[in-house]
Image (cartoon, rainbow over all chains, first blue to last red; front, top):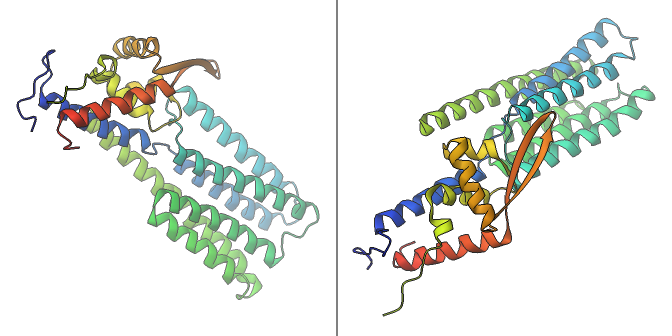
Amino acid sequence: MMANFEAEDGTTRDDLVQRVALMETMIAEGRRNTGRFGWIFILWGLVCLSGIGVSYLLPRSYWVWPILITSGFVIQFIGIAMRRRSGNWPSENLKSRSIAAVWRMMGIAIILYAAPAGVTNTVHQIAYIAAIFMFLGMAHAISAVILRWRAQGMVAGLWWAGGVATYFVPRDYVITIYVVEMVFCMVLFGVYAMWLERRRAASEEQTNA
Amino acid sequence: MPELPELDPVVHGKLRLAVLSLLVGVEQADFTWLRDKTGSTDGNLGAQMMKLEEAGYVAMQKRFAGRKPQTLYRMTPAGRKALTKYVAALKQLLGGAL
């Protein structure tokens, strides 16, 4: 219909088609979640594994968890501050804010749940550990649904399976489940997420070049 | 024959259109992020952002992230309206092929 369209300012149909393509690309870019958060999973996986290791070696050291958790928060805060300063921080959109909200609220819920358990020395109860697994599984599952990310959905399933399994395995194996979950669902999942983030960044650089 | 719609010259500029399209999907964006996404230079992007600001299509906010100054932009309701109008004009010009 407008094949021979040419405006007074010289704008042609091809120019308009190019504008449409440009808009589509940029809208998709703006909505893409460009955050780099894999390192946070690795950090907290290592914090929890260190906590278990030190608690095993020094069973009466009640200071271990508060110190490790505080250190984890300090390292995370410094890491995020450094990224913000370097300008390497994603712009906020509804998706990124939803995911950030899930993880922040999950963190607050776990602290409110774990702190009294630590004070009252009830952290060794099966239900306590199972609930932690369920919290983490739920956060992963919500994030997986928002991002439509199957791998994270599988991680959520592993957390929930671990939570259920703690009720059925002999008590001595609960710690093994905990360690396996931390290694696979936090540390290795974090490594996988970082690998994806690097690959995406490399592909973006190629596209911009 | 129906009259052809005019394209808003402020929105029509390639870099300005790219910026508005980016801003439509986010709540606010840092200057550096916009520069990286558009593959633009500091000078060119700064000049185009000023034009968008003068037209009232974007709003700027300066703040500090630690000790480093940060310039944030967000799309205003007028900017959103202008982009919507621009898309409608494009549709009409391209014969509803969109």
